[in-house]
Image 1: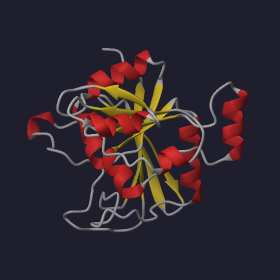
Image 2: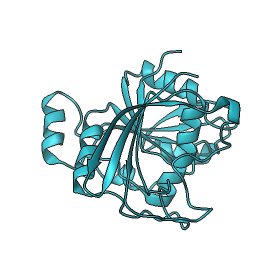
Image 3: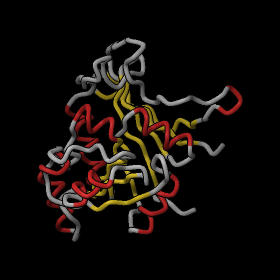
Image 4: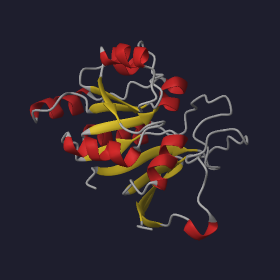
Length: 226
């Protein structure tokens, strides 16, 4: 089944946490890494997050640099890539920053189990794509995105979506900035949550590059086929 080129970009603590036990974001990287992330957004056709990230962090997922926005417009694109939320039950608040900030298109991917009244409200603000019965069928959803012309898709988390994408073999590359702090906490979200792989099915990666940036390190991985 055809799908876009898909990569995950994330920042984590030295112990692999992406936020605190209260699901509060902390500053893990600095300006250089922030600019790198903004460049990745600008080079992507679409950016995708899970509903957990929307409820916890309320991201706008916009390109912040006016220069990068200008370059996209000059190339005949919208200032911001298409912004996508994976939201099986249509729980996305209608006043989320993803709707209030920045020009461009939005897509909410829901399942057939999403309450119709909630879907109807979201439909006023975004295109709705229905994939899967009880929860979003991610392989089917990625195929649908490919059919809509999305060739390069950036994933910005969180831990549940990362697991869903990786466990379904839908990720090509992973970029992780590892910062110089320890967060701890058994309930703090890690880079990947979910059920986890059994010992004989662990997902293997190939290290493409490692670069020291400010007080941390950027690791670039290629996901190997299982």
